[in-house]
Image (cartoon, rainbow, N blue to C red; front, side):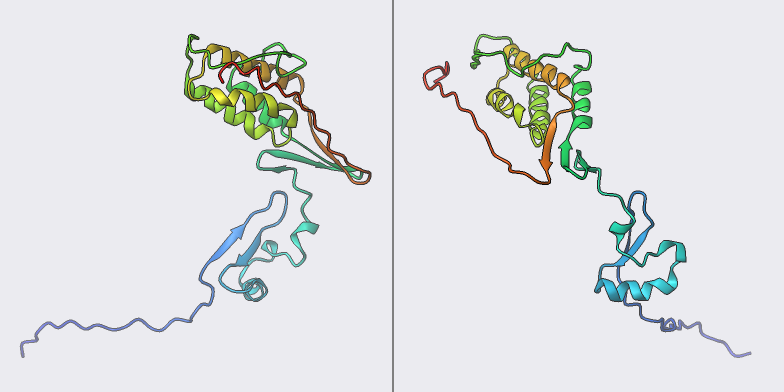
Length: 211
C-alpha cells in the first residue's frame, strides 16, 4: 500500500451574497411601534429594502409623529402643550434636588434670599464640604433653565465655590426652601399676544465686602 503524505488543503468558502447594509439600528419610541432605519444609505432606499425581511408588526408606513404624542420630557425639562401655549418646567428635577440634599421636609419660604443680604468670603467662618457645595450649585444652575427667578441667588453664591463656609451653605439652604414652595413654577409661552422682557437693577458698587 503506497505511503500517503499528509497535506494541507485550503479552500475558500463559497461566495455569499453581498449585503449593502453595513449597520442597521433599531430605534425605539415610547408608546409607538419600532422603526428600523438604515444609516449607511439614504433612508428611503434602506427602508424599502429592509421591509421584506422584517415582521409586519415592526414596520410603519407613515411619519412617526402621527403615532407619537408630543414629547413630555426633554433633558429633564417637562413640556406641556395646550391650545393656548407651551409651559415648560422642571418640577420633577426640583424634587430630586430637594431629596438629594435632605430638604424635602424643610420649611418653605417666600423669597430665595433675605432682603439686604450681604455675603463675603467669610475667611474666619467654618469650612464645609466643597464637593457637596459645588454639586448643589451645579444642580441649581441647571434648574435656572426654566426658573430665571433663581438666577440672581445662584450666581451670587457661586462666587464662593473655591472655599465655601457655613454662611454660604445657609444661603443655599434658603434657596432650596424657596424652591420647595415654588416647585410648580416654570415658563409659559403664549401662542398669541405680545411678550415683553422686564428687567430690574439695583446696583450697589460700594457694598461689596471683598473688594
